[in-house]
Amino acid sequence: MSLSPQFGSLVPSQSQEILNSNYLQFNGGAGAGDTNTFAQQYLPEIYEQEVERYGNRTLSGFLRMVGAEMPMTSDQVIWSEQNRLHISYQGVGVANAAGTTSTITLFAPGAAGLQNVISINDTIVFLNPATGEESKALVIDSGAYAGSGLAAGAIDVQPFDNVQIGAALAAVGCKVFVYGSQYQKGQSMNAAFAAAGANQGRISVEPQLTQFSNSPIILRSQYVVSGSDMAQIGWVEVATEDGTSGYLWYLKAESETRLRFEDYLEMSMVEAEYNQLPAVPTTSPGSEGLFAAIQSRGNVEVGFTAAAGLDEFDAILKNLDTQGAIEENMLFLQRQTSLDFDDMLASISGGFAGGTAFGLFENSEEMALNLGFSGFRRGSYDFYKTDWKYLNDASTRGGINGINSVEGVLVPAGTSTVYDQVLGTNIRRPFLHVRYRASQSDDRRMKSWLTGSAGGAATSTLDAMEVNFLSERCLITQAANNFVLFKGI
Image 1 (cartoon, one colour):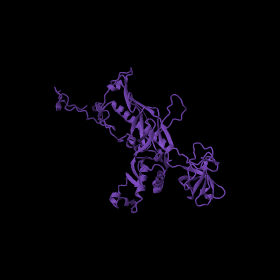
Image 2 (cartoon, one colour; image 1 turned 60 degrees about the horizontal axis):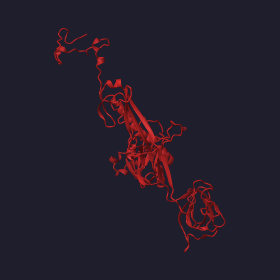
Image 3 (cartoon, one colour; image 1 turned 60 degrees about the vertical axis):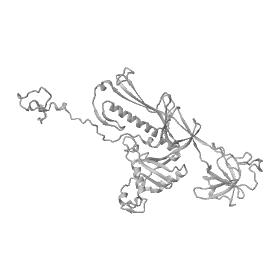
Image 4 (cartoon, one colour; image 1 turned 120 degrees about the vertical axis):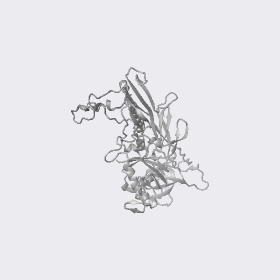
């Protein structure tokens, strides 16, 4: 064992001073058996600052961008959405009678939930969507009248061109809609119906509302630390995703439990499903999340790729035209789908050089090098595109080799008007918003409380501190017909 200075020359100092006469050197040994290293195992070099190797690990934020949160007091949320103003009949057939008169079957006899609201003297368009052939005609009889000899779901028409409806239009699968009416001079809407003496007045078309509902689910989590571990303090310098920075000890784990639970609150609203399990007292009815709502009531695009170019995307726009045609929309996409959109947009300009289009960038090569498009306009629609971390994170829907089942979602911006059953009036709400249970005595938006006998709590004999988290909420997806879900399969 080597000492510096040599034994006999060590002079202890009376104060905590670093002097040549009181310094013991323990780092001179090199071999495994050298006793100079005996103290090194007790003197580890510890980095007290945590390394953020995954960056920001939280996934929430999507609903804060597109929706809002509102309290409720019931076990169920019910809302009504308007139906279309104009009525059309799909999948109708035609039977040609003598002369030019044709009988059109709007729906089969006994069909549930369908009503004939076409009046005599209405003018209609009868067309075959597959071939484009059409015929315009005047309604001369309607099964909607009690005195008519026609079935309830049938009408008799005479084409204006005085030509019997052709065979190509006779196939089942055609469409009928009303575009107006024609009456003779002085003709009363209440004139006697000569065939059966029935009232020939207009058939009243009552507005129909479609009612939807959703139920909240209860989410819970817990973090437990024993009293003994609380007494063994080890400090770690942290900078967490929720903005916390500084030194933490056992509460570092509690902080991450809270962050994880807050992510669960949003992930559950996106992924929730109605529970189809047998009804037992311990079974929750479940809830309808964003993905389930779009697949049930919205639009689903399967296998979108850049190779399809604008043709596939334009088909989406044409479908949106038939729905609410919301002008501003947001695209939340996984990485590959986002790149597919970038490739699609970069290839639609007239000027190319080495596979890169410059026309979208005022023909500037320098500007064209930035091919990450954040927004674009097509037709009458504006789209704002962003990556959705939830679809890219390796611990959730990201990091999957091959095709991801969910590759993105198109969300309309702005608000929609719905009829609130509780308020009894039309109200405006964001298309996506969260409802959470709350009253004057209890707010269940995000509850947290301490139990146990450590850490300030004194509620039980448990030698630990329990941090409890709870929330009760559901997602309301209004006008889902304006949403698009991009799926890989």
